Image (cartoon, rainbow, N blue to C red; front, side):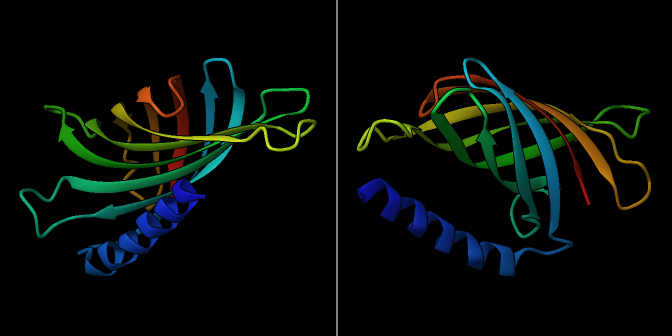
Length: 158
């Protein structure tokens, strides 16, 4: 229960950040593959943090629901600071960062089996701006604590 309250508090802290964001707040859809959790579907909120050090610093908040099979349930909530570094002579940007990971697993056949863990993750990725509003991306997130998985994500920001 305390972790759920902490997650709700984190979500309420993100609302002022979204309001203070300078530039377009974008949403996205993603497909993820996680070690020992199979495929997952998710959504992303991407907010620029222009008032800080650089215009390339963003807050990425993502939620992924995975389908590990049988009666197991698994989902993750991630909040990452992501720094986009444009590659020379290219529109592609290298993305580096990290943040918090909240992972929940349970077995629907066993009452009270739910476990929620908080950890950190690292973020490595590429963004492929199209010149239009769409931005496809690829990411790898090694998790230290929380889900303790490697997650590969492909998605598109609108």
